[in-house]
Image (tube, rainbow over all chains, first blue to last red; front, side, top):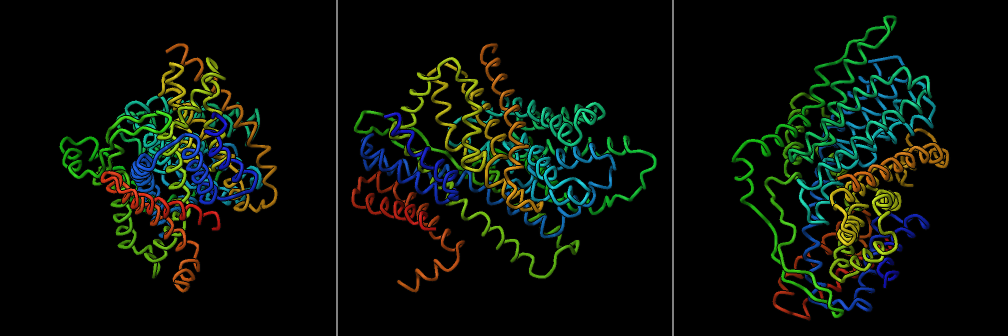
Length: 507
Length: 59
């Protein structure tokens, strides 16, 4: 039964890795396998299947609303040339190659992950670094490594939201431990970026900026997500890095460097949309009464208990509830509209911009939406059929006390195979939580390990490596990128394994 | 019907949009059908979701 329960996940992994299928295609295969196995061997009945599918809809919409609108906001800014303004300004700050690697490959990459994600950091930064004289290999590796720690709370919190959706746990439980694990990872990512860029010499010279910027970004992300603003955690972390990194670079730059004017007005306009996003999020979360008022519109169903033919039951209860007016997706939509109006009144758009924004957003998100729909439906069917429970029992019996050290590797494996931290969280979070419960381990810590592992693994996903390679003119040389990236990712995963293990023992 | 299929298949984004809507709308309808224990209705819309997922294999 364990092998049967594992089969849908294995099918997805094998098809995506072995046969290079997209998530939208492999997800369909995983769904059909889960449906067949749950029906024939786990004796799920028609009514349970119907309720499982209806429950999945709210999880799917919760995740997709953020993904759609986050990409929309990114496109609104990119179409106006806002990302170009940021990209042109960063290299003016310093001539020091090591500091450039830190500011652009780590800080700016983290900021871009906070606001966009979807492979944007490497795609935007690799050409900039090549233009500054970095080798194409380093130009891909530096931003790939640099934004890892910001993946979970980046993309406006899409991956974190996916984890909350499938586990049913609130941000109060999950955000703190995840932010601590990712914050520690962030500091070590800075060290790794300096090391990759200039070896021991760069590390010795740049340890102070690494520590100052790393602590600022990690602290900003931690403080933001632990007061409930998890959807802007990555954005605030990246912004803190820019706020600290800009003056630090100006202080550290040598006197012979030609001074160039920084276009402050253009920079402010470029960031206006994200300013609106931060302002609205703060308003809703922190001003008394606003959240309560917006919470009046709620979409969701109450679900009865279900029992399969094998006797596995899921208790009655409300499914995922969508508070549509205060949903992160709604805040992003309003921010996108505000940003559009700001750019339009500043005259930054060419004719037909709105059409291009909507078309590119739709084309970019629709195929991944189908993949996410299939994978979430698969995960919910597995949960209702008792397949996730069977897997969790199998893992807890086989791995036992050592499980905390294995949890981040499961997250990483899921991300490498499925191409994203969000997909890994959708597939594995419920399983990790169940296993933790069976072993009597703190679920929040195991899930923090899951999502940190997922964030680290996502940058080594073949799809992301291929995109990164193509932006730096390294098509066909993806193996070189992986050979450089994998030892760093493996080291960071070992570190998280150790931290998880110690945290479980000590806390 | 043939023309409709040709229009849907002519653009990948359009094809995925149709599959997505088919899956989501059918899954939403399964809730009232399950509550009223309509076995035919549940079977029909479940079959649509299965078909949509099967169609992704040929995307």
